[in-house]
Every structure is written in C-alpha cells, then in structure tokens.
Amino acid sequence: MMCSGEGLLASPINEVLGAHRDTILKSSRKSIGPAITALAESGLRSAEVTLEIWRDKDMWYRASDDKFYRVEGDDVFDLASGQRIATFVKDEYKQIKPNSGVRAIISSALVGFHLNSTDRDKRLAAIKSIQRNPKPEYLLTLKASIAEESDAYLLDIKSQLLQILTIQYGTTPQNRIAAIEAVSRSLSLDIRAALNPILATELRLGDAIPEGANLVRILTPGTDGFPVKTAYDMLVKQKLATPIPTKAEVLTALEDNIDAARVGDVPVAQLFDPEKRLEAYEVLQKQGLAPKRPSEAEVLSAVNSYIFYEQYLEENAAVTEAAKKALRSIETKVNLFRTVDLGLDALSLASIYFLAAIGLAITFGVMGVINMAHGEFIMMGAYTGYVIQQIIPDHTISIIVAVPVAFVVTFGAGVAMERLVIRWLYNRPLETLLATFGISIALQQIAKNIFGTQARPLTSPEWLGGSWVINDVVSISYIRIAIFAMALLFFAVFLFIIKRSRLGLETRAVTQNPAMASAMGINPDRVNMLTFGLGSGVAGIAGVAIGLFAKVTSEMGNDYIVQSFMSVVVGGVGNIWGALAGATLVGFMQKGIEWFNPSNTLAAQTYMILFVIIFIQFRPRGIIALKGRAAGD
Image 1 (cartoon, rainbow, N blue to C red):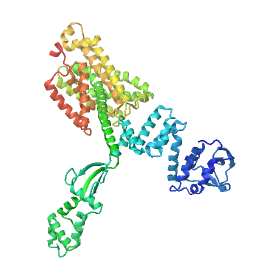
Image 2: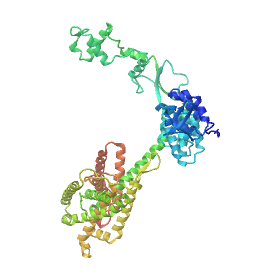
Image 3: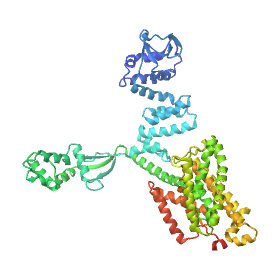
Image 4: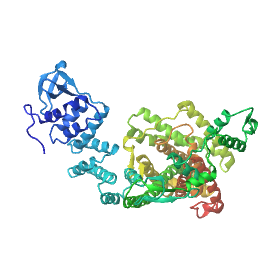
C-alpha cells in the first residue's frame, strides 16, 4: 500500500531508515541486507528515490535530529518531500558512502521499482539487469510487472525472461515443465542458455547408486570412453585410493637415492630406459625409500570395488526429460533455419558474382574476348565511388552519383582498351589473354601509385546499415539485399538491351556472322567497341556495389575474376541467362563447401575449379547452351 502522509513534518521514510540507522552508518555488505529490504518493501512513494540517492552517495545523516537527508551542493533536502530545508554545514552531517558491494545490493532492490517505472529506459535497464544477474526474488516482481506493461517490445522481453526465471527458479516441477514446454518453439540463445544447465551432468562414484538419483548412465572403467585412469583419479581425489606417483616424483626419488652411481641394483646409466627406472623405483619402494606405487592389478581392483555413474545435477527426472525434448525441438528448428541462412548467404554471394560476371558475359560470352583485366574495371569502379565520396560527403547522394559516373569512367576505359589493343587481336585468344593480363598488372600499379596500398573506405548510407533480423538464427545485411536488388535490376536491363534494343540486335548479328552483318549495313567495329565498352561499364557499376562491403584496394579485382569466368563458362557462353545460372551455381557451391570447411576459403575455390573442369567435360556448352547458328559457331 502507498502511504499518502509523507511530508516534511512526518517522514515515514526516515522512520524506516532510523530503525536501521546503525547498520546504514556502518555500511557493510554483510549486514546491510535487512535495511535495504525494509526500504524496498515499505510501500512508500519515496522509497525508490531514497534508494537511488543512497546508491549515488548523496544521502547524509544528521545526528542532532537522528534523520537522513539528501545534500546537493550547499543545500539540504528532505528525503520524503524533496523540499529544501537548510543550508549545508559539513560538521553537522555525516555522508553515507556505500561501497561497491552495498551499491550492488541497492541496484538489485531498485530493479523491482524500475520494472514498473513510467520511464521506458528505466524499465529496459531493469530487464537487462535481470538478464545479467537473474535471481529467484525477481520472479514474482517480474510477473506482476507484465500485467502493467504497455510497450509491446518490452512485453515480449519480459514474458521470455519470466519463462527463463521460471525454468531456473520455479517453485514446483510442474511450473518449470510448463515453462520449458512454452519456450520449446523459441530460437532464442537465452532460452537455450537456460535449458542447457538443466542437462548438466557430473561423474560420481559410490558403493551403490543412491535411490531416486536422476541417472544418465552407469560407467564401466576401461569402456564407454571412460579410462581406468580417470576412474582411479576420482578415487584418489576422494582419498579412497593411493595416489600414483607422477613422473617428476619418480625422478626425484631416483635422484635422491643414487648411491655409488647406482639406484638399488640398477646403474645410473641405464635409467634412461623406462623399464629400468620402474625396476629401480620398485626396489626403493620395497626398502621404504619411495612412496608406494600401486600395480596395475591393484588399480583395477580398486576401481572395480566401486560403482561409477553419470548423474544430472538437476534432481527431477521429469524436468530433465522436458528440457531434452525442448532442446531437440529447438535444435531441429535451428538446423532448419541455419540451412535457410546459408541459402540466403549463398544467394547474396551469387548476386555479387553475377554483378561481377554480367559485364564479362558480354565481352567474353558474346564477343569471345578473354579479358583478364575485367577485375581491374571492377576496381576502377570502386575507386571512382571512393573519389566521389571525397567530393560529396552525403553518402546517399554520393552513391547515387557514383553509379553513373563509374559506368562512364569504365565505359570510356573499355572503349579505349578495345580501340587501342583488343581490335587488333580478335580471333587470337592467346594474344588477347596475354595482352589483357599485362594491362591488368599495369592498371593495378597505376592504382597503387594514385591511391597507395592501403584499403580505402567506400561507406554505405546509414539506411543500408545493420541487418534484417528474421530471428535469432537468420539475418541478412541490408547492403546485401540492396546488391541482390541491383543484380536483378541490371539483369532485366541488359536482357532488354540484348534482346530488344538495336545495339543488342546488332551485337547478336555481328557475333553470329560478321560478314553478313556488314553486308546489311552494320559496322562491326563500332558494334564491338560499344559492346566492349558496355561490358566494362557494367563492371564499374559492380565495383561500386562490391566496394560497399569489401575492401577497396588495387588488387580487389583478383578476388572476383576467377569466379566471374567460372560463372560465364558454367552458365553458358554468350547467354545472359546462363551467366545468372552460373553465378547462382558457383555462389551456392562456394557457400556449401565453406559450410563443410569454414576455416579454409582457399579450399572452396580449389574444389570449385575442379568442379568446373569436370562439369565442362560433360556439358561443354554450359547449363544454358546457345541454340541455332551461334551455337554451331
């Protein structure tokens, strides 16, 4: 019940404090408990504020009237009303200085008040305090606060926390089992952390198994993965058997009993042999010069004299059975959602590979040009985004500007490369490979000279920060979602260009039959230039997208060139749909291999290359092969 009579003239809060005056003034963690409990359970409106004042070391005691006050600066305030009543004179007051232990007890008591506070932040802080340090006394307080909770988010947290406390501190097995069954559908790590201790076990021994013991299994020394030595060590620990001397103790005993270069009947020179050391030690043991070392037969006899068993620390078998059932159910769901999470990661990686490969699908797949500098166009796009961000500090605007600028820059670089180098090497794949490989090295060195060797940041906008958390197992970052959406957008755009635009029609015509296309008025040189520039421009856009989550360095293109070629070759040369299928297959395969061997990403790439080599032996034209005259070429 709340007291409405608190004020300056009558202060029940001081009556409560006065009843425990000596304890409060002593301020000892061992004895302060009753005083704090009395204050917390007083039902007074000012109890919460008083506890906060006490915790913050702002409470002072005046011996002249045997009362407690709050002091701030030069002013003295009444604890109950908060009214200023006097000017502070230091000699008249004694400060109450609770140590860290007392403050911790006060903070625990405040949790009960804060759970029902009108301040949402205080309620959230109280919940987190219980999560950090759960105690049985919070159970009823938390349960009562749930009925008054209006915030849906805090209500969910409180309800889950109540179930956890009930699992740990429920008064009856039925209550605990009901709580366990209620959380068996949850994927929360906190729930699993609360259930796991119920299944904690301990190895024990005795002449017989105690009646009603919550038994896991009976252990036979030497079998069931239970070595005889472990069993004997348990006997030694409980002083039921003679300890086996350690190697160091044996050596010390031998060293202490060397006489005329011999230990017993064994020469010192022979003590390097373990059997001779054991022989010498047995002689010392018989002479009473060394601790007794039990024989193997004695060890076996000792361990066979007792029963060894594994027992749950939880005494109630029904509770442990409910916990096992709940954890099995949770583990099944966790594994299912881990598979979903792995699939989302693979889909995200596939979208990245597709963005990197779509330009290559045009230059290599459509034109047949092996461009080893394709990764450097990705790098140029990423660095373009970095430069734009130095000019435009707003990250959202800078990314919007960087996408078309990166396309223009890499488009121009691609056109220049095609005009200066590639046009002279058509239908000469080996020379094209060597020339573009040299260009890639040159572009990397130019980037190092301009930007240095350290990674440069390409910062994503704030609205792309964080992740979309579906549950405690499945989540995906907003950046990867944006890249996935971008991959779908560019797939649609380039599918339209290749299938519906004049440039796409001319490109397909030149690819299938250059002489006939030329006779029809199409300029093959112009088409090749624009097509190569288009593929390079797409690589630049991919560089901006990849740079948002990957390090931007002069060598970043190397991380994607191999996967880009694999995506195009596996999917089907000369086919945008094939590039999509190939990138999807490569992305899912890499994530699958990494799942089996997460510590070795190099192994994943090695296995993928082996897969591609085997795959093209059986399906040389890829997943989606071209049909018609182009396929024959």
